[in-house]
Image (tube, rainbow, N blue to C red):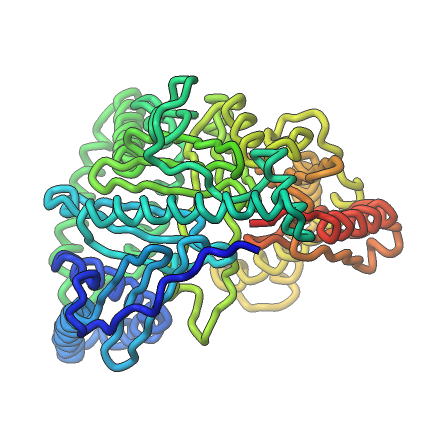
Length: 584
């Protein structure tokens, strides 16, 4: 059996070997930003104690002054600590690009060495901030199979280094692909069967068979492969209109306004605002009814225009000139590559075999435009490793298409799933979706009714009309709770209407939603586990819920007939055990 001999162990970092390199000093900014993100996550856990302390001392001018001084000192110490830590990280960071692998050494007190063979690399993502573009640098991250963490990261390196790394990865993958094909031709058990299957079905699995810099093919594709999608200014407007940031910002502003109630240091500002509001209210009262209505309309229009400008600007900054390519190789499953960004350019690479699940979403705004949003979730696990929380990981990138049409979504689904996915629907309006049992309405309605009743009781206790608690409060709560029953039933019915599922011999899809709709699709052979659960209500009605766990999450099919759920469960496990193709 032929094997590619590995390179010898790398020389020590202090041996003077020319191959060992250090990133540009601009990498200090990268390390500082990464450290700041971790610090912010840590401070979030202490937000409530800090807020409680602020609410305690804000009525005392002396304590409030001391509190503000302490905050400034604390913030200054954090800035100094972050800057020092970033510089130390840069000084201790070394990398070496060998023939078949990447070595990365980092750490000051706790030193670590990363040895990443190139044949494990599933994607090479490139990001260029505005500073990187000015000085000719890039930040490279390498994703491996079965991990949510972008294990190999080279911040602020020269473009020549990134190109050399790309070439080495492509050459190694082509060599491994060729040897795998030779082994498959001569036998070799499951791996041979997998190689034969990959040769028969280019979209089913295998390794990348063509480097990103390949020549243009006969179909006119460029060096990245065939161009599947390109977004223009009109698409940026659609993305901005479909953005939910305005609602989130309004909620944050309301919370801040509630916290910044009268206190030391805020009285002059609040008095000025109060006088301005009173003056505006007097002027408003002197206007006629028509002018009052016109003024309200103008104010609402200005608020909506401000929200539109904010969300559209964010869409241009993140998705400007979004382009999606697909490099379909003769042996491997091909590669999806996207590039977008106005100030910071991001290049995302996801190999087709690594895609575990496709998620297609359509909210009310996108539905008006007849558009969808798609995400291709790669093989990854978010379970904490080595005692670290998932928030501390440098997560691998997810291929996201912010807006696309129905035909484009179907084409991307076919490319992602290959010949196996011909019967898998990715659009919510597909007529092949079957609805789950109508008993699902009762379960949802009961859940909404009980949770809503508890919320109503809490709201009446906190903000209800003043008066002694007793029978009057209980009667009022019962009245509102009973009135909530038809609303809960209507909500449950709407959720049931959007719930559906379909499957064929190779894959399955689940549909859910309330106002919008989301479709989650996957191949059965990529399932990590399948579980059948039955609640007391389901047992009485002969129903069950099927949960299919993937390497990137799970797909839930609720309230199926118990026999049907068990058949699907057994068949999924059969497909997993009998498949000889790689799942990543």
